[in-house]
Image (tube, rainbow over all chains, first blue to last red; front, top):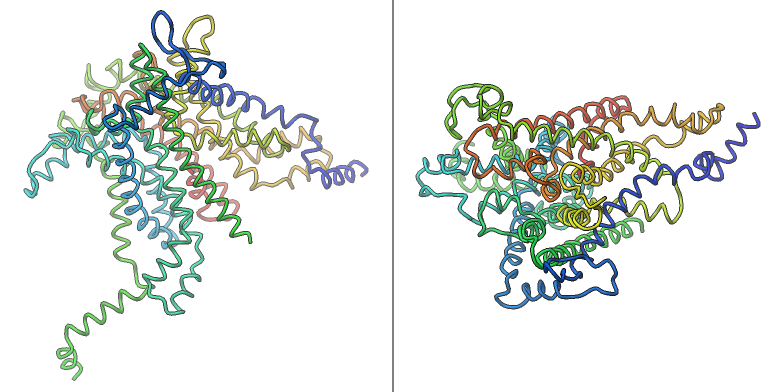
Length: 316
Length: 310
């Protein structure tokens, strides 16, 4: 009896957490936290240390400099020069990456929004079926999905044959470095990841908002533009960020569906870091990673700030 | 009479009806339905064709030459079973996925419970740290890990590239997903059951072992399966941290030979990968669905699966 009331009182004051042995919660969290520090935080530092590192006096290869006091800007200025100066060696690849990603995200939105909207209007069994069919591609390994397109677009592939059979378009090789093939590959690969958060946002919209807009005399198009679209803004943002992050680091889609002509930033990073290990390549690769990370994290931060603002607005 | 009227009004009336039909927001969204189901077809048919042609008796990518298991088992040189590179990639992926599952899931489960209960600044910081990998492009983590395994984590001068580095990386990548999956269920359960057990006299550890953990069992199982599927799916970091032929995983194999490979055996190996990944996810959703049904909410399970990816 006494113990019961004590447990209650303690539970009321500090929650049941307080009944467990002291330090129990930090202790069971510790392995995971230490793991993430050793294999997530330290690697991040290693990128900075390598980008700002020095060169081996004998072999001329990059060596990370762990002490920030001795950091040097050589690799950075090389990369920035290659990006910013007209005719710089990274400029073309960088602009191409931004163009591909922008176009692919735009197409994903144009395609994904109606699909997510349709899905949010379905009810009952049909909706469950649609949701399951929507989730399947998310869990089909990405490279298999891209590989499926490689098959279809080979010179003897089905798409090539069907297109040739219609006779409207002259037979062509789709895989010889066409931007359209790579961009469509990116859209195919990532659009399901955009649709799911978009669906979640559209589904949360109270139907009575749209109804009141219509009752007040708005045309359906206007009701959509003034009510549904603004209310789904968070979903659009979330989905866009979710698919932009991997797209900016992509090199495999461009490699499988294109040629060297379609190289993206990821292609350069992968080349500098893992293949061209001689000379200052690694430092330059690391500096490129930092440029990419800054670009991407500015997007993420914008998203987080906007989400926080929306949450505050809703709370008011 | 009315026929005459219609004949006279003719096109104008038709246009009016069209406008009324377009303006009616409660009409059946036929065009949207077309886009929706067309999209589903577009997203599934290419994969279905790849699977179909893995059973093709011949080499063609576009002409059906009869059903056979030639590219899986029968062909003495080129089938998944007999081509040593293909078979090894299957084994490497399975080995990595199983080990990752066994290491990452317990650690992630402990972390999720710990973070849900532990209060204070260090806990907030850990929570933030745990979420960071989810918003980091994989290529950034892959580059960082490549550099630490090249320069820093070199025990006794041996480089860990290959299976050890890949395993460490897969675990790192999986932990946050486990925490996210577990957290949904942890908050769903609440603390009442544990409290009741303790009020009835159970010591805290006993309450955790006999009340909380059994209630978390479905989510723990789902975590195992999701980690398995994530590991099978992983490409960039596996590629960065590989060393030679011994550490080629299934996605790496497809990346390496997808363009040049002439044989449908690559379709077969991709199908094996798809079956591994989807069956893990299928099992996870099955278990979650049963739990959701017991709780009486219809589509909650599918919804939970959506959340994993976001």
